[in-house]
Image (cartoon, rainbow, N blue to C red):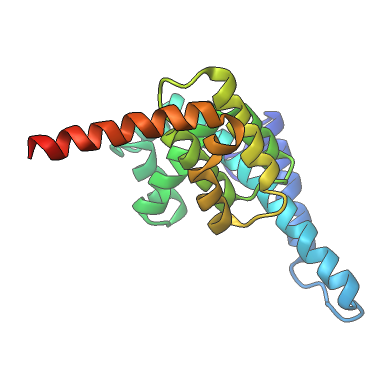
Length: 192
């Protein structure tokens, strides 16, 4: 593959590309319902695992400023051009890539294929939305709980669960933050 060197990631990507090439024209005759269903689930797991690798490499691309070689303004702009995707989706990908560096449990779940890309984006947004002043242990518990919930819930469900995760992992902290939010709203209403 052009542009790939001798790094372990390069070799792994070449192996994946080779395996996919072998499957390009494979007939699906003989693949019964059970095998088809199992294959689709395993493909989804592999897709998630490959997605984590892509985002990990993308975070590295951002840190080494891969865009400088082409004169692109940002890593997201470079990615959009290089992969023929929209700048919007490339920005989302770069954001997830940098966020995954912060949330180790989420990255591990994604790398293991237990969390897919949609779920990872939603979980990362929910964790980013947590109050900045909560204890690290509470943030870690929220992250762990959302990763566990990904085994049984899609991204839409996780969005709702993520909004209320503090209620589950630290009800007292959630109550204190809700009280502070309501008090701030009342003060703002009184000023108006």
